[in-house]
Length: 330
Image (cartoon, rainbow, N blue to C red; front, top):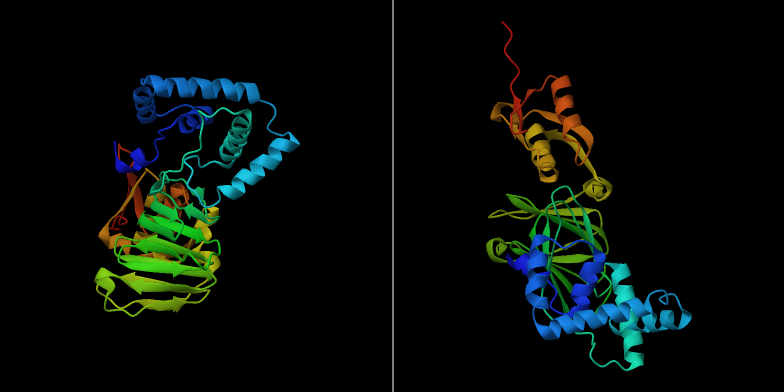
């Protein structure tokens, strides 16, 4: 089991019961649950939680429960909870409050400090609400590691791209680490993307401070203003330029906007969103075009390339699309 998968596996009765109510378990989750529930103490806790939940069904909207749920949310604002979906969080908090009032001491809300790993699948965008009120939107095939504690708000972008809407908290700077840079914000909105050969940061609101680490140590810290982009390539000086934020963040709406971009660049970006890959012949890769595409619409791009006479497309038996030079005319 990978570390990312392991970090998402619950280890208590509330966590497992919420996972069961959410839907069918994956094979990894099913195996982990079988090991966990095999222990008598765990099985008893799980069964008692199920019985309690059934007894409380239908009272979640009672005014008294609503008040308790609100109070519980406030008290748990700065804590980590395993459940990540808002309905499940609200329901479990109501359950914990009622069980506490009923005097059932066997059930307790446990806080497990430490790092959480979140990932999105290919072609998927995922929204994560953190315990401090910040929101992270993951682009396709992206991974972040998050640690929110009393004096710390830290995120590591491991792979892909993410948009951050940071809740204001002057006492706890929000730090995003991506490759060899650290982006610090107190309350703002920005985008960080990892490319094979560079890291890109776009600021849409507020101010952020970007500090060099490791390979970028020759650069000075940079403070970005809204509408600016920083591009950092290993071993090179950072470049800051104005940018149209709406175009740069079009991926948040499932769109990709290209202005005089090379066929190689467009293909590389589309490949991030689809399991059907495009392979571009080097002699074709430098051709350029402008386009507005749905992130998962590979077919429209390929048809456009052919219609413009920039390349010919061949589909391999495994579904791979190859963009080849046009046949030479006799």
